[in-house]
Length: 216
Ligand SMILES: [Zn+2]
Image (cartoon, rainbow, N blue to C red; front, side, top):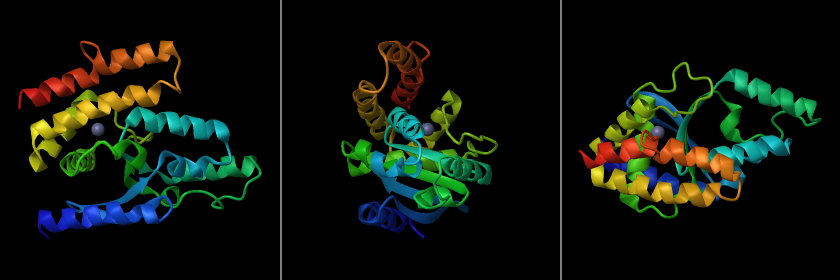
């Protein structure tokens, strides 16, 4: 299958999924099977409706991650959430998202954050996340979230292979802008300072990523 065909399918999926609540399809890239999830923040945190504190935590997590992320859901996590639902007096699986109902890899695209990106930038975002899957960044990572500079640099390089450094750089620029917009209402000024340092300090993840892309 050619890249063009893959992308055509991808964008078709991206455009049709929102019609389905918490849209989800199973896809394969380089022999790796993953769930493609596309939804708004509200839709994505719906699985935690039984516990407002978990819902708030998930909302903050999504704000932190921005437009997209690669993840892995384990059977243990699903069991844990089901147990929490039982504890909260809810029937397991009743309102849990389909995304969480099966273990495995996933790429989550968060609709709220993607409206500012053009198609080429969307492609860079998508291949950045596929890079995490291809590079095995989620293996043995129980939380399933990637926040490691070397892994981010490698995933950026993977996205650049399918797009170009300028596009990936533009994605990060826009993402940085969105990060603060999204963070402002949900974190304290102290937390914001930590976030700014972690992203934009001398050794900040974004500082290093932007420099690496500029040097390409
Ligand atoms: Zn990443």
